[in-house]
Each structure stands twice: as structure tokens, then as C-alpha cells.
Length: 296
Image (cartoon, rainbow, N blue to C red; front, top):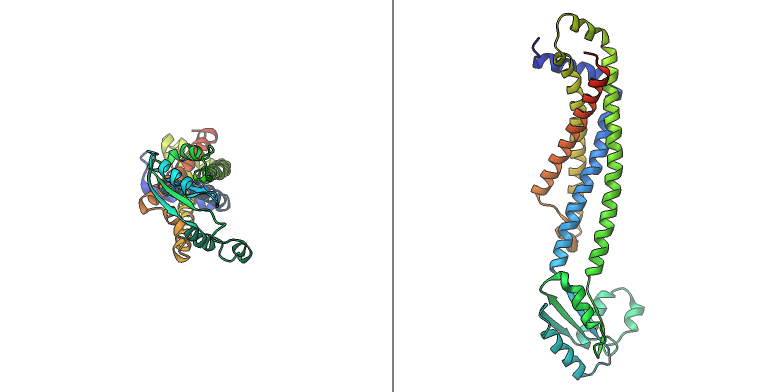
């Protein structure tokens, strides 16, 4: 007995309508879990892009003591110029450092009033050839060089950001996996109920010579449809979230996070992966149900 598309579509739609509440619960659970999966993937990609941008612009700042002598400043400049990892250096004197401090502390009137050009340290801004060498170069200038107050770089902050992102991503993925398992169980139960409701029809079809696949395909397609619909809802949610974040970054001109906006290619690949996972969950749940509860 051949399996026709019209028959499969009709039987699948009938099964979904008969168990619509269970099917709806499965679809929504798949949607929520895949939304978390998609969000975790987009978060990881956005953070990697942003960190990559920051890493390429990592600079080392060597702060001098406010009372450092001109000879000490000259020695440090010479030391910087002889450091092969440093490609470019800019020196800010007391007046320039004071102007920068006022910009950084804008709104903090008490802090600004406590400063003066004479008390603000001069600073060397050093551009590195390789951002990964920032820690090594930083340690060189923090090893008791005369006149140097402290050398700092944002590499530690970037590392902390990576760690926080990894933990957040892990939490999202764990929750998503739990929900995906729940989705699989709900789809399995929905198929089991459909099989139970049609047990007499299945018995009649077997008696008239229906093949195993003729009986199984509508039930398996039912699970696939549930997983696919859940994935489509998840795709819409993730797309709206991504566009919302992109709009806020552009609207409020948060240029420091500009690299976190993902290009269309990365977004499409992520969404296709979400759809694929939804299909796999739906097919897996229905396949297990058919094998366990459909006696053919």
C-alpha cells in the first residue's frame, strides 16, 4: 500500500487537532528551549566579535609618578622605544593627563576639585604589536622601573568578560537542554496519545494489508511538525531579540559595542541551526514513540 502525500497530510493534521493542547504544549516548550539555544549562540558570537575588536586595540598605559624627574621620563621613553612588542607610543604631559581626567570624571565634581595638573601623573600610551603580549610587557614596567607608578592594560578585564560570558552561556545551554528533553517527552506523549486514540484504525489497516511505513509515517510527521513549528517560533523570537539589541546599540550610539552587532551571515547560520535542532527533536520524539507504542 503506497503512502500518498494527501493521506499523510490529512492524518497528520487530524492527529494534531485531536491532541491540540498536548501538541501546543510541546510546540511552546520547543520554542522556549530553542530560543535559549539561539540566544546563547548569538551571545557567544557577539562577545567573541567584541572581544576580538577590543583585543586588536589593546593598549598599554604606563603611568609615571607625579613627581617623576625629566630624566626618569626620558629613560622610560627610551625603554619603551627599545621594547620590540610596542609599535607606537604617545606621551601625555601633566596638562593633557589633567584634561583627560576631567573627561573621565565628568560629573564627579568632588574628585575633579581634588585634582590639579601637578598631581595628575603623566602617562605613556603604548600600542602593542600583539595584544596577547600585554601581560608580559606590563610586568616589565611594573618591576620597579624608576619613576613608574604603574603600568596597566585592559587584558585582565577582557579575560574576566570572557569568563562571565562562558558561565552565562553554560547556564543558558543547561536550561535549554533540560527544556529540550522536556520537549522530546511532550512530543513522545502527544504521539503516544494519538496512537492510543487510533488503535482500532491501526488494527483495521493492518488487517487490510497496510505496510508498517504506511501506518508509521503520519505519526512521525506529526512529531516533525511540532518540532518544526516550535523552531519557527524560536527563530522569530531570536530575530526580534537580535534586531532589538542592534536597534538599541545604534539608537543610543553605544559605539563601544558596535562590533557586537552580528552580520546577516552569522545570524542566518544560527537560525538554520535552531531549525535543524527543532526538526531533530521532533523526529526523535516521534520515532521513540512509534517504536515503543505502535505495534506494527
